[in-house]
Image (cartoon, rainbow, N blue to C red; front, side, top):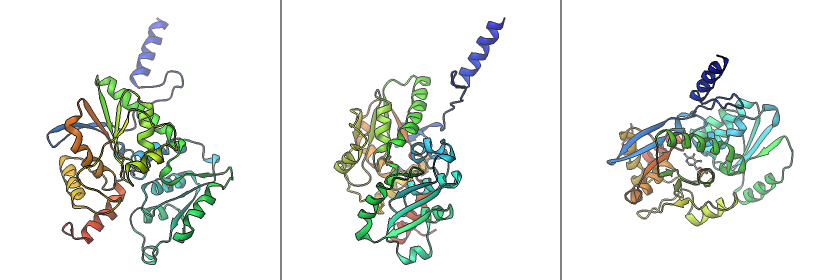
Amino acid sequence: MSLWIFAFGLSLLLMLNVDVETGVQSMPQSIVERFIFQDREFFVKRDDLIDPLFSGNKYRKLYSLIHCPAAQYQAIISYGGTQSNAMLSIAALCQRKGWQFHYTTKTVPERIKAAPDGNLALALKLGMQLHSVDHADYQHVVEALHSDTKASHLLLPQGAADPIAEAGIAQLAQEIRQWQGQNAVQKLHLITPSGTGTTAFYLARALPDADVLSTACVGDKAYLISQMSHLGAIPENLHMLENNKKKFHFAKPYPELLSIYHDLKQAGIEFDLLYGCPMWFALLQHAHNITGTILYVHSGGLPGNETMLARYRHKGFMQPD
Ligand SMILES: *Cc1c(COP(=O)(O)O)cnc(C)c1O
């Protein structure tokens, strides 16, 4: 009798995805949706829906910090661009933990200082302390930040390109493995765009049987590879899809990207203009050569669309609404 109760209890735990050893429930953090685009079937891992501020892959990259005890740090130090998605997510993290957040950027123009918008406005509201330094001094200041050795201060490199990201991306990989098993997917191709390449790198490492296909959105492929090699040897199942149709400079408006943005949104899912749209632009050039299931890992970034769309309007690429 007691054996039956035990067996019943165990199967209930397994049904609820509870880790039998730790008792911790491991429900997937995001859903997978079927997505038909340009007459082809894709699946999308909706990491963009996890949290409006920790959008997409930043939730995964900051996962171990989100779950670490607040007493572990007093402050996070980071640096990069003034509309960075990583900046916004770190600001949200620090606000929730009661940590200070010191963020260094190159000189911010007076008119932006007077009326910050987009991610910068949100991050400042969350308590981020902005330190702007002259272009000429920036590199030097960033190097000095890296040698700040206070144990209560954590330095996160630009874009949170840090081994601290591995644990959260391993959790993402675990959810993908579970979905793959439940749906009996044989050959899996994972798509996700790259800035620093940290997400694609750790995803490929955690899922050696899947192909991870990415594209370089910031700088070129050589730059991306040099960035990723700071994390270790590049996994063999990680490949870069070349965009052969048009050269994009990061964060500039292009009618081609706006057009794909509208088409994707029309088809049911909004993607960000800086990473998601160039990724789809490259993916569609190669999709006919990819056999098997394609799972696109939505990397988030939607809060940044507001300022980008404003720039598109300003350029006259779309009707003001
Ligand atoms: C930060 C970001 C990326 C790039 O992630 P990496 O791990 O740096 O390659 C991709 N997409 C979105 C929307 C992002 O905000």
